[in-house]
Image (cartoon, one colour):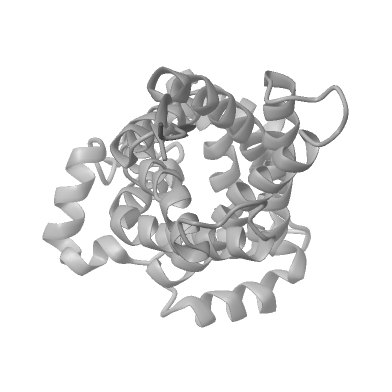
Length: 305
């Protein structure tokens, strides 16, 4: 009689659906923090009469307060539709492809703990692939978020997310939807590696500690750590990406980096660090907690020889 062994399985399509749902839910909860981050990153030094610089936005709480006061509470959710478009495509692909790519790299017959460098490589690849597909949604999201309060009589560039896609194609061409693709690939591949590989590794490590198991507490701790690593590593690239997408005056990635460094110094690349960490830390916790719970609906035990 054959000796059948149980194995837990979930298909790519099911993982994609779970990932897209979890990413969209996390995005919906954290859009105000992301809007504050983008405004801080795009903010330039504004000279005043006495030679000092007077920034409009000060810190995450100050930025949120200023946006709410000048543009209303709805201003905090600018770009939410494009953000959901992005997470549905990008979130679904980068997370959905992670396990298949990881298995491909080590081989389907591999037994034991997968090496960290293989996890990092898998996450780098899936992050790059996903953002190549989702870049237009990212561009529209940044464009919508970057618009602050306009003077009376000055119309907004875009009426909404769908209008933004058509307007950009009409005025700038289809290729404009992939503006900032270079830094975006670098940023999302690196951040994806920092998030998924660190979450995977930390969760695996925590579960080896006595009394810890695959629980909500484990997911919470691993999610917070993943968010911290992602912000520390990805902030400089994130600033360049936001500036290139929000301001068409930069010729390319190198030009944006040099101009920012020359005019504002190295710390400009960590503008919005606190709101970015607050946002990514919260985002990762919500996303991974939701993902782990939703996947339970689709997980099934399969018997094999």
